[in-house]
Image (cartoon, rainbow, N blue to C red; front, side):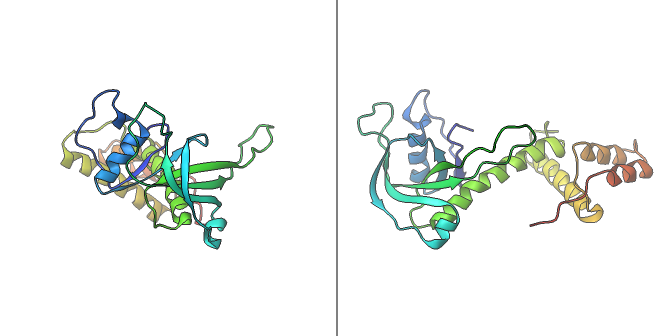
Length: 220
């Protein structure tokens, strides 16, 4: 993933751009997404050049979500020669973000900072845009969970059907453990299930492993 922490929605590119082309820049990628009738929500640096054309009034819902600015304009400097000018209006939303609390240590808590988000979704409420970007973390957590907890760091086959079977089996096994045992699966849980179904682990060993798993946290 690029430094822009890009989250694209319903977008795929079949053609590979030439090396060092404008398509490799954030502006070029965003223009390609729009050309394919899709949408993007991504983060940019606070120093990213942006020319404001209109500023929107913030609703109570947007303020409650931490939004401090909602504007429409065009990113990038018109004098820049590094990339082609972006060919569509862009919405710039600034969200006042609270840092995650530090675990241990003696350092004081970090101060709040401004998170700058750009998107081509001009009509979606600002608080929804902020929520969409926050969900990117859940996507990252899912892939970490998929690779480490479900034991899917290596594919058993490169055939699309086999990949689907491996993914579904891992997800179903994890959900069954959560629903039946009320426990949070660990990295070794999927391995223990594989050993059990292969006959290498007994019923007692499997039950002992499940009982030692930490309980699920209640939803808040």
